[in-house]
Image (tube, rainbow, N blue to C red; front, side):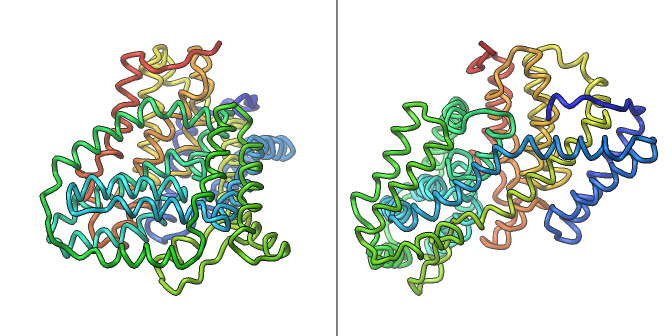
Length: 459
């Protein structure tokens, strides 16, 4: 899609007006009317088609651009399907419950904020969803901080930082899969490459939360104990449940394609699930499609474990296809090329291209408040520029996550910002200064760009 040939050369003012109209339409729909992003994107597609018809461009050519744009996301679509299957199979096998159970064992009164950050990171990686992590274990931790009379903004900052570390680095995360697939990078190669900026950001954040943690000797840890007890009662906490995770790591190190890695790990998990569950194959198929449904009776645990399935990925798949279709039209009509041509003279250096792409991802988050679009549109706009400078695509996919995925919770009117504020009861502005990981990630990716470090050239 990034090589779609423009069939029209719009005036710069027309390009600016159209982009402004699209951004305004999506922003108002998401922020004011709390719409899902699909509808304003569909309306934006109609706007672009209308513009093309006014310019006497045959509808067939517009349709071709639309289809070519959507076609660029088919690799991501199939990957998303297997992510849904992997999550539900890891739930059945007990892999995810066991990881969460192990994480809860780390909670102690000492270094509370640092441990909250580490545990939410473990849970986030285990389930691949930042918002689910915040809404479950995050709520438990904010309650504990309140009982211990600790700073709620710092506690919320630790929760958000850990949750979005997990969202960014988990192979189960839809944003991680989206960023890698949209620019044609292997999922696990993308995750390994993100380590250059993510590991320093994690270590610095952990140290900062450790310094800010007061010495607490008493407190109410009953809720965590209840979580652990409930997880044990499911009968899914066993040593062998880590085997699917080990298989995932081994296949990743062996550089097996992500598609096959996810499929094999899922198959191993399904086989293991028969060791501690009396379950028929027809039910297994139902779980793989519709997702695992937990029925422990503890609301927070059920919310944490009821996940996965191919069906759960349909929302994301639809969004990806719509956004890429819109991108196909933007390229077909020459709108993106027209805008990039105005700043192309400024994009001759590696540092300037990385800075521009990072600021674009941040800007889309601020203007639209949607992390998926910040990833999609940044990838669409800058892949050609990276290639011109001889930079491998995994550099761009890393920037898209460093400045796209983790910035969304820092915007008060964004999807994540609004959700987190409502769930934790702490305003975005209050926790923003303490969401160290989310603040450090874009800073480090821009800094490394200027230093020329950790960048991979096209071989």
